[in-house]
Amino acid sequence: MAQPAKNSNPIRLWGGRFTGEIDPLMNQYNESLSVDRVFYAQDIKGSIAYARANVKTGILTQEEFVKLEEGLKIVLKEWEEGKFEPAEGDEDIHTANERRLGEVIGTNIAGKLHTGRSRNDQVATDMRMWLRDELILIEGYLVDLLKVIAHRAKQDIDYLMPSYTHLQRAQPVRWSQWLLSYATAFQSDLERLRFTKKNINKLPLGCGAVAGNAFGIDRIQLAKELGFDGLIMNSMSAVGDRDFVVEVLQCASTIGSHLSRWSEDLIIYSSLEFGYIKLADAYTTGSSLMPQKKNSDSLELLRGKSGRIFGAMTGLMMSIKGIPSTYNKDLQESLQPMLDTVKTLKDGLQIAARSLATATVYPEKMRAALSPDMLATDLAEYLVRKGVPFRETHHLAGRMVALAEDENKGMDELTIEQFQGVDKRFGDDVLSVFDYERSVELKDATGGTSRRAVLEQLEALTKTLEI
Ligand code: ARG
Image (cartoon, rainbow, N blue to C red; front, side, top):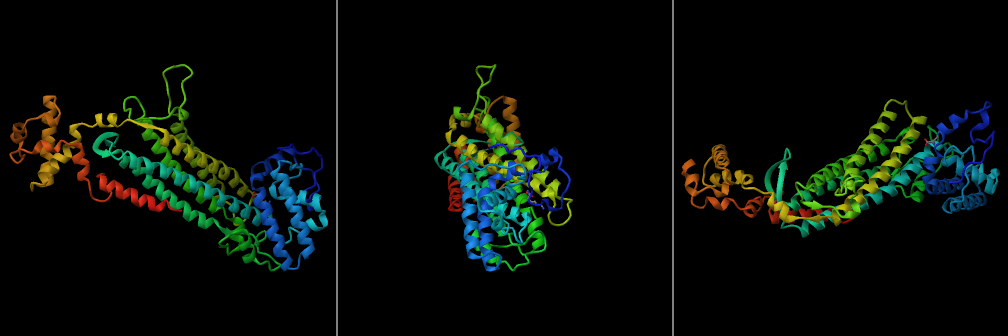
């Protein structure tokens, strides 16, 4: 970006009532061009629509509109070609564009553009336009991640692994069941995101600084031209609301929290002690000191950066929770967390998808981590099928666990006599319980980990991915 030209007395668009000099540090403190320059195209598009609507109000002649549009397109081109030169008095993207427009087409016409408009309705419009485009990208990346999960879940459906509660081995499940547990969370995220996208797409422009537009501007025409689905129906709300940003940051925080837990699981699974997966080199780094190290940096960063996203959300909520009605400069503080979060999330979703797509899975390690004690519940349920009340079978299965422990054996290594010594109702077929495949296949109710139930989940997931 070109450095602003030095000028001890810069021209300011609002300068009429000001006589004193501005403290240079205050200038720096107040400026937002370094952040909101990303909206240059939205700002210009909004101005063209606003000018067009002002032909109908009689503020502009058709010729003046043509000049304005030409001028705004020249400014747009300058931005696109990296030739836009900010000037010292450019506080933000709105003042920068208008100042430059005046230089290009003359202030006589350029000076009419802002009639009835305020930066208050302008910035809210730019932000919504920018966000809705970014949300389309985020939605795409989330769908990509879900597709990678779905693909792996289908391809790896035969792999069995321990499930964990309290990080203690619990019951055998399919690896696909674990994969799809996160898909379920990301799927809800996708629904929330789609809902938020709809909320964002309402137009604030045409509300002026606070009280509305005095020239009868056709807001419906503005909304149509700018691709909004509807209007914000109250001028004070239109200029003072940043809930749409909060909503995006909240969505992002929930996605971040899911990415973080997902990463945490995979970090554990990729430790040598587990060895269930190995990340591709492209998503790991080594240690500067220990030559043997291969660290899961992509996952650790996903976990760590989710903290940044929560911080952005709580920070913005703190910034706005106590301000009085309508526009206050505090609202400018919504820009930075919005941009930072959108970038962090977009990058994170892609890193997550790529890390998973390229990871190697070791089903034999998963299988080796299964142990017969994980079938103690299956043993209790075996007796339930013979009519014994569950409370009693739970106790009997517990006694078999204790016996195996005493004997320093797997439960599947105990003899039929030992089972029947504890309870006569254990039949000759009791050892058939100690089959991991059988165990997962029994969990066949919807949501369970049998092959059929997993495929059912996959089918439901695939439906939501059709955009
Ligand atoms: N840069 C400002 C922002 O992002 C634009 C609105 C300024 N409005 C004002 N009344 N000073 O919030």
